[in-house]
Amino acid sequence: MPRTPQEIFESYIYAGTVSRDADALAESFTEDGIFEAPLMPADAAFPRRLVGREEIRTAMSAYYEQPAKDGRSPNFEKSAYVLHTTSSPDVFIAEIDTVFDGDGDGDGDAGGEAVTVSLVQIFRIRDGKIARLRDYFAPELVS
Image (cartoon, rainbow, N blue to C red):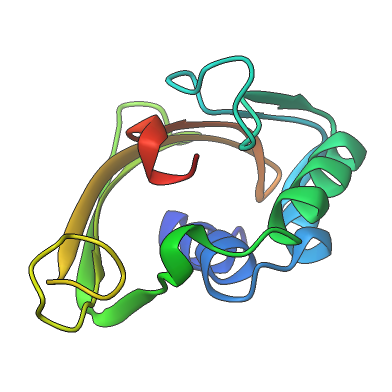
């Protein structure tokens, strides 16, 4: 039985955002899978375009070795997502609102008020794995 969009999305999020496990993240892609973050500048620390499972593994491993920006981590209980299916059974869209908690000092950093980050991801699936992922988010969130 093929994996559902929700199963694919949740395993991708767990591998990347939750556990920062580059091996598990890479394995969620097809051998020739493509990861794109089209809004990232070419010189950013976060990769703009990765082609192939091994390039995804290597680049994301290097990225995950860096500390999270401002020491932030998401609050999964306050965060939410909606998955949208399309007319193609191989394409779905994730609309995500991730909440990062703060300490209430109001300066907007990890020690400040909660910050909500909204993003959109477009998934193209082949044989239960991600063949292409386009991740649209504000570049300053990871640079």
